[in-house]
Image (cartoon, rainbow, N blue to C red):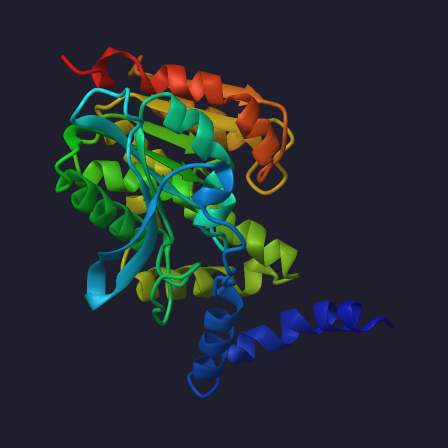
Amino acid sequence: MPRSKLVSALLPTVLPWMTTPPLRPLLNWGLRRSLRAPRLAHTRNPGDFDLAFATVRIPTANGKTLHAWHLPAPQAAPQPAPALVIVHGWGGNADLMLPLAPALHAAGFALLFIDTRCHGASDDEPFTSLPRFAEDTVHAVDWLADQPDIDAQRIALLGHSVGAGAVLLAATWRPQIAAVVSLAAFAHPADMMLRWMAEKNLPDAVIGPYILRYVQRTIGYRFDAIAPLTTLPQLRCPVLLMHGEHDTVTPVEDAHRLLAAAAARDSVQLHVGPGGHDSMDAFLDEIPRVAAFLQRPYLRQA
């Protein structure tokens, strides 16, 4: 029997023993290790896109700092200028989001690309999570709001995947956020965890409840409280949900669930287009739509 099939066959028998007190620390260590985000190094910076920028360190929670690239607004933009904080997904970094920069910058926005903790060139932590992505986002917003060339009332957020869930959560903590763009957000963290368990051949009926409890206890938040299904309806700013119709990581049904959760609000839009979960080329094709959304009157200078 192939090794993978043997492991899968043994898991239903072995895993219940792993949740007993003597073996629980070993199981928790294995879970923490399996869930740790990979750290990718940068291979380029905004200068590779012929954009002027400054590399900055932004203080965040727990005495840590974030690596970020700050791109001032174009000279033709009104001063103080509107700004956009851009947040990558799990295991990504600011570099991966840079293809979005030229068109968004040309649309008149100052841009702040951040590496969240445990990613890119930012400080490390024992673990990261959607709420920690959101903490890093609000610290980035606060840093931007203190810049003399930025209009603190016209700061918007754009996030991808876990970063999308994080910017939705961050906007509930900072009601002054002007708008949110969500790329490939999932509807609920528990659903993502169950999909992860299926990918790892972990029988969720046997160990699923333990894993869900462990992760929620570790991050210090209940999944229901931080789920986009919960945070999106709380927002009063305009929100643009974008999703690839061929997304196999977060099914497009999640986007429709989010839209349904915000059905009472006409300021939430959904656009489903071609591409998958990480299809940057497909997102780039939609940048004119994103720029038009962000340039609506609520982001224009009075």
